Amino acid sequence: MTKKFLKYLKTKTKSFKVFDWVLIVFGLVAVVIFAILFFRKSTYITATVSVGEDSVVWNTMGPKYWFADSFHKGQVEKDGLGRIQAQVLNIYSYDKTPTNKTVYLDVKLNTVYNRATNTYTYKGSPVLVGSTIKLNLDNVYAEGLVTEVQGFPDHSVKQNIIVEAQLMEDDSVFLGTLGVKGYLADAIQVGDTVKDNHGSEMIKVLSKTVIPAKITVTTSDGRVIEATDPMKKDVFLTLEISAQKIDGKYYFLNDIPILIDRGIPINTPTATYYPTVTKFLSY
Image 1: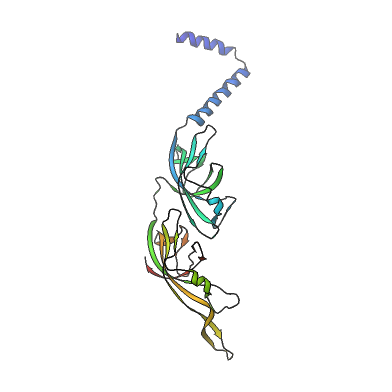
Image 2: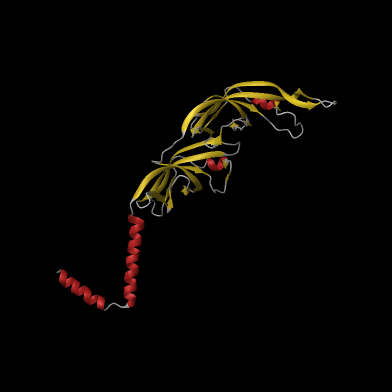
């Protein structure tokens, strides 16, 4: 039976013309491409994506509020056959400025594993810490930075630290004082907190001291003395901060270093201010 089939096939192929062979080659190539695209082995992995990179509504302070609020748990991206390629498992966000948020998405991705390079790819792009990824989630487009990948070791440690900080305001008119306006001093209350979208405390005001602001003045005879400013206040705060410790250094909101003489952004429902760290009390 096999010999008869081979003899028949040989006879038939002898009658093939160049055009017939071209059609056969194209047909085989099409079968191979179809097999690669639709029968390749896929693997689901989980990655964390910082939304914002190269988005049209993104700047250095994070996405705008309306854009950040477009994401929700359960959003999916599907391919042309209706198969789920990406799904949002969780969302972590916080206010970075009064008008901008930082948004992280935990996303389950339908990836292809490359044994040769030991990497996963999503829509042809490698899923690596530091790489960018494009998502189309229920008509919401976002391009973000991959910050964590399933199985990749995380060397950061969450730790609460306590610091002293002072509100400082540069005044282009009265250069001799760093005090702030009285109404800002009054707006800050002991117990004020900054929370993420899950309700976890990220920063808390433990204590507040308000005194008349010190001002440096020069007398008519050329002496430099220290006096008090009748309009401004010096505000000293004790803050408890939920920080991330990475290689012995502390960070707030994942990427803001907590250092002496550096400001910490605090955004509450009624006020926004940037106290400058002056001392570490516990860490």
